[in-house]
Length: 177
Image (cartoon, one colour):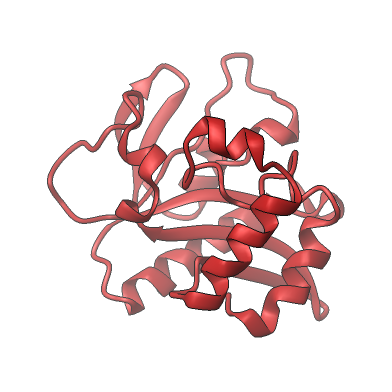
């Protein structure tokens, strides 16, 4: 996603910045900073990332309308992920990380996430990635509110051809493509 698509991202994310004013900054900022700048300041920070490149993710469209977002970049671009104990690196291989999936409410549960994941893998490989990694949630009860599935679901990653390579916790598999 480049600056010429910023308006599409704003339309997709809406006034709340996808979820709680995040603007896809959760993995990029210390929690205290993220919390203090939820909303407009996170939006401004994310726009700077888009302006300076490289593109921080990809958009999905249906009928010319933005319906989904997938954030991905080399893992090093996400300092909070790099410091995670649950999602720590499993080896020394360089990976691109998928850290966020957002699908507009009217298109959820229709396979958009799996298609975004497939497209993300293709995009990352075109940028030189050999491994694409994701960190979905696997709810213990099998169902969870959509707002908590922003890193994707295990089923969606599997449908996109990813395979589980490790588990940081009972509900947090690490998937690779």
